Length: 234
Ligand SMILES: [Zn+2]
Image (cartoon, rainbow, N blue to C red):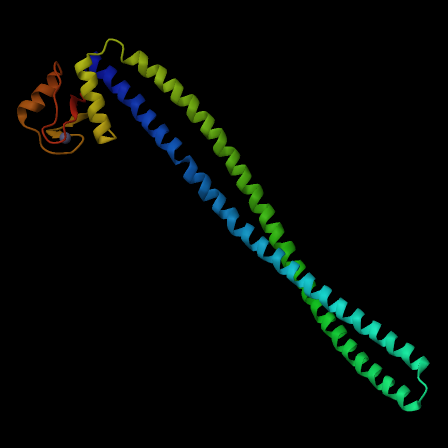
């Protein structure tokens, strides 16, 4: 294999690594989003249970206000009883008080049920909070790894570019520009080996003269079908 071909293959190896690193760099935001989407589901469950508790707290508060109001009403009736001049008046107030007490008992029973419900809601929220925190810890750890990788990609890219600059020194500009064009077009290989009588890129059978030229390796030989540059692997 000619030193030129060897140099071009090394260049191709660096360029393929650069392309791979660039693809990895491009995929970082999507990967971040994917990681964060796992947290989003937990975030929503937690928020829903917190809102449920707020709603429930308000309805419990309402019940307490209702009970307090009824108790005040009883006090008012008791005061009126003290000033009652007639027995009927006194008994009528006693009847009213009994009615209000019935209401209070109903409210208090409801309050007990609501408080039990509140306990269940708080337990659920606690569980959601734990799940969220566990997932958040995991997600943050993954973000950190990803951030480190982003930094490493930058470093590797810089290194590959330095090596590339050195490699293209002294390369035939015609070979180089053709190589770069094909690499851009195919997105994978610009230089492929001749495999028996076929192109190592598109696997089409090559004319004998092309195979012959590629084996000699003195000029650029390209595949008639995919345009890739050919070299003899042995
Ligand atoms: Zn081909």
